[in-house]
Length: 88
Image (cartoon, rainbow, N blue to C red):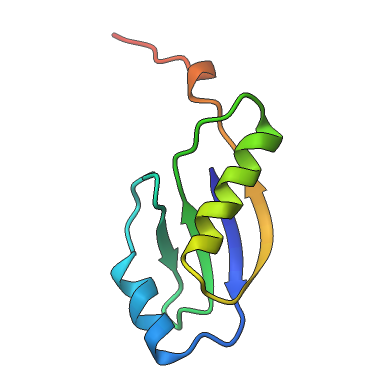
């Protein structure tokens, strides 16, 4: 699950928490990548779900658990079982 958004009124403690939760991995708790000013972000998390709507809700719950004020701009889900890996 990838959620793109922007922070709304992030204070210094929130900024420090976002920087500490940074990374590119898809984890259950989620990780943030962000611009240099820490105003826009991409939140990546790994969720299990039967369908895209269920996965989106789980991803939003993971984002909300971090407690930072934000606005969601876009949500994208990828079903990992549908990805085909071509081996040489």
